[in-house]
Length: 202
Image (cartoon, rainbow, N blue to C red; front, side, top):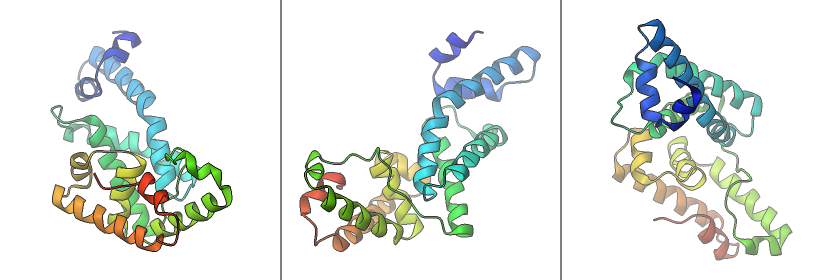
């Protein structure tokens, strides 16, 4: 089975191959499947870890390596009927939760966050706003911070955030509402269009 075939397979199909490695042929296919999953997700996961680990790139790179080791260790827990994307981010979220407990790491805003064009009209104001937003996010409890990052920086739908965080949809909505309200209260002295265009409850 060549690499082109693996590139045409879904994430879930690749995981099924990874879970079936009992013969020399299937072991080779499993290795190729892991390589393809790493190609698809290493950069996405690195970006997520950088956001969650206060822009500690070295630590984020270590986490990327660790998560693929965990993927191999936990592959038997994967349900092929569920989305791999949500499953791997659930593992990533738990890794960050552990790091937060042990090291008190904070979330960092990233350049890929979508800012309205109007912010560029006043760079000084933009910098002040982003600094205040950064500080506001860092002050959130970890469970509020996690749903905020997954929703507004990683753009996960609410139902998948619930799956990733192993919470009910109602809990996710409640945490997201709290986080958003807390941040908007702290940013109320800025132009309201700043925060309403950067994040909003859907």
